[in-house]
Image (cartoon, rainbow, N blue to C red):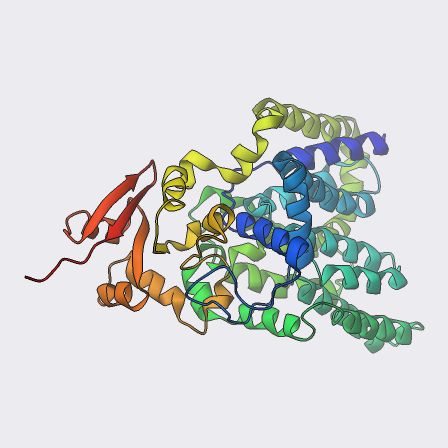
Length: 458
């Protein structure tokens, strides 16, 4: 019975991962993977003319290679691969937290997965979700010698390994403070894991990059995924419920583990700072919540088992059916779940750009797709690798241009911009439509393409 339930849950988590999230960064990551396969790992910026040659820490190099190879085989495989990793993440949580067929643990797992859906994108973060779940499994089961190899792989897939080191450090510290018999083993495992994270193409710069990004206020104030959660949005409601459920669960446990509470508070802090950290909080809190609710769950099953056990099967099953009905055909998966083309990307104008000469100004959200479509013939103004542009101040210049703030005209000349690819709703678009020195040469569903033609003085 439990095996059947786990199979249903795996399929449900697989289906829940199909979400409509525009692949803003996915495209430059695919192109980076192609560059790595053909030329090796770059250490300076190669995609832009504004930060060309600047230091670039390709901290997700192995993820980029995997994405490129899958894309080359079949773009739709990227979506299925993402779905498989997400399903595997929550399946691992299910295996070591779901002792029997019980309704309450299933609701906790579903709440966690639903909370995380806002970031089920085809991006390297999905590896950190999986590896965090694996780390929790190894820690709770005390399979310590499998942890260092985990970090060796994790640090080459995504910089989220920093969180993993924090979790391992706190667990090891707790073991040492409690003077457990194997405390020196914990210390050894932590130090070995830390050492192995330096086995990457960027060495200690990888750690520096991850920590710098966490403290970069400019990124946190400008880029949407670094914003704090907006609790007025309906898709943030599961996160709000999860917060209350997590702290509420400690009321029902006989012994509160300080490590569970401490990690929950730390991850909640990060999640409240940036929505991109919400899935990490959701994954980390599953084991303590289920363990805290264990007595309540047993009581519920003993008194209402005839009702709760059928619901525990039927609820996930019917959720699966509802998700299957909504799925597009296989051949359209990449188009729907990654490209999101006609709603988000300026496809017609990008085709036109490939035929035009001169430097282009593009909005932040379209830089990755421009790299994917036009590199090496065209280089971008900016893209999702915000850290590359930090020293040059390109991100602030981009904001000045898009919003037509004071000084935007001088930036056109500073960067020798000839073409401008702008959202139809941007303030600068409205300004340029009435300017004689900017000619509208292309238009599609979401964008305008302008050419700058300075007026000749008589």
